Every structure is written in C-alpha cells, then in structure tokens.
Image (cartoon, rainbow, N blue to C red; front, side, top):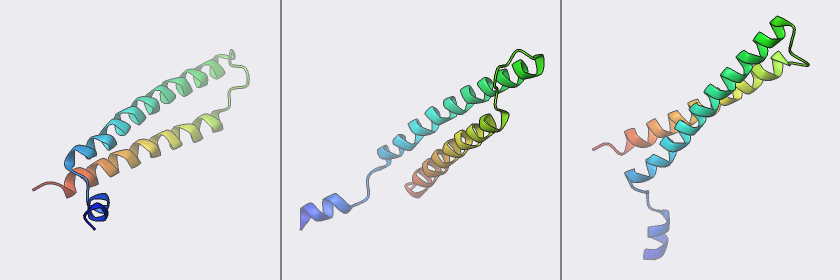
Length: 84
C-alpha cells in the first residue's frame, strides 16, 4: 500500500522546474520562428522570396506562441500551488 501511495502522491516543488525549462525552450523557438517569418515576409516584399507562404508562417507562429503560453501557464499553476 505504501508503494501505491508513493507512486500517486504529489511531486515536490523541484518538479515545477520541468515546466520552466519547457517554457524557456518554447519561448526561444517562438522567437526564432518570429524572426524567420519576418525575414520571409521581407524577402517576399522585396521580390526575392520563392514560394514564401505567409499563411503557413502565421499558423506556425500561433502554434509556437500557444505552446509557450501553455508551458508558462502550467509553470505558474505548479509554482503557485506549492507556495507555502
């Protein structure tokens, strides 16, 4: 019975760092995607972009931002719930 209780009990505050690291990673990926999309749009405006898909880039930006926001929200929930 102790094993079951140990396997299902809440984890400590240290495990909130998992969400923090994911949040930082997804923020970096979002910023890189933002810069890449901006560069693609600039190339398209200058007439040098070949097959640049603005709609695809916008969807990727939205997806990247939602991943970052979800990670940030989970980290905030985790950290806030374990404050004493």
